[in-house]
Amino acid sequence: MILVASTLLLFTGCDKYLYKEPIGLLTPDQIDTSPTESTVEYSVFTSYQLLSSTLNIIGQWGWDDGTVLRNDFILSDIASDDMQKKWNPDGDQAWMDEIDNFNFTSDNGGFNGQWAYDYDGISRSNLAISYLTDDALMSKLTMDSNLKNRLLGEVYFLRAFYYFDLVNNFGDVPLLLKPLESFSEAYDVAVRTPKDQVMDQVRADLAQAVTLLPNSKYSDDTQPWRASKGAAIAMQAKVELYTQNWQKVLDYVGQLDNLGFYSLDANYFDNFQVEKEFTDNEVIFAYDHESNTVPRSGNGLCALLGWGFVAPEQNFIDAFEPNDPRLLYTVDVDNQAVYKILGETNTDNKGNDDSPSNKIYIRYADVMLWKAEADINLGNYSEAIGLINQVRARARNSVAIDGTTPPAGTLPDRDVNSTDKAQIMGWLRHERRVELGFESQRFNDLKRWGIAKDVLGALGKNFQDNNYLYPIPQREIDKSGGSITQNPGY
Picture 1 (cartoon, helix red, strand yellow):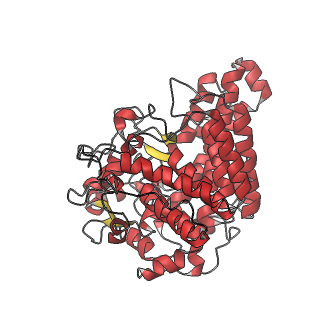
Picture 2 (picture 1 turned 120 degrees about the vertical axis):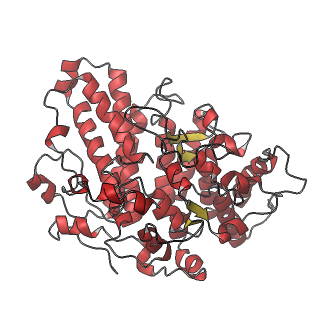
């Protein structure tokens, strides 16, 4: 078990790796008083790393504090009705089971890990922003203005992305907008900012990113993994979706469509297959996992699959209609393989802690369903159903994993003449679940629809009203001396 395998590491000096400093505090080795152009570019590169599933980006085998890898699959998938911790339940990493069953406390490492990853990403982004907005430094370095603008747009996007995740998980959170170089500064900002104010900052950062990023599909053709104008506009639409500003969702999706860069891939699995990364038409933003790099950047979540982690709930499997090829492309029960994560329709990467399979954060099918949801809420029912039917048509026309074409009658179109809002919304919710399964979307969907308690409670989960927000990690409250307060009910 992972618990056993990591015990020696946990007890041989892990204390020095624990995330003990106040949030946002830069250690002396992170501060370069005479940065070069390479320093500035590297500060942007490292700001991406906290989106990865690479093992031990912060800490070393810190299972108890939730920092071995990014915890989206726990807080967003296992917590939902899609995923369970393991194929064969056992006591390994019991804190994951606590999140699955909603019997956790604020000491649970999963919350600490997500908080630490997001705030470390914000701290790195703030450092990069401080370099790139220092006119004297930029003049001294004679950095090309196009490069400077592109890099600045990228880190504004990343800071917005991390804060968006924090608000969805924790509600009001401390808002840090510059590097903090002393304990007094760190403690001064260790207070919770109202989530609406944080979201306004997210909007401001994304607006900056859109103006700064180049008007091309990829910000840099040689490094297509970087945040792009399309990714920033898509995030603008997602922010408005989560705050129910329906017309703005349509406006931003319209801007995204006007770029002309994105469309549904012909085959569903093209989104996830390693050999098609950054050559498909659908993926808008993904973390680029690669094998054999220094520093390592492989997808460590594949290692956990080798230990039996990440399995479907039966309820998830039952949600798929007959012959829907998306089920087997997502998870193969017979072979205990999650192909979406493995990046191949085989098990070669199962157990590989340095897998090249990317982590997909935004793809166009997701965006189409955002637009459909906005249309439903604005009464544009036929438009919404048309979008849902496009997603279904792509699925039924995808060659199945065994090379065959799904039989006639698979995934029939929804009735475009329906005006029953509840029915159409039910179609949308179903389509999001089966289209986006295991992509860390389901739990946030259930919460923002206001149905998490009903859906999860019906499955025997102990979800309560206060669980619409996770608890602030207790260790963060303790480090702040109590100036960071706890969410109600914890």
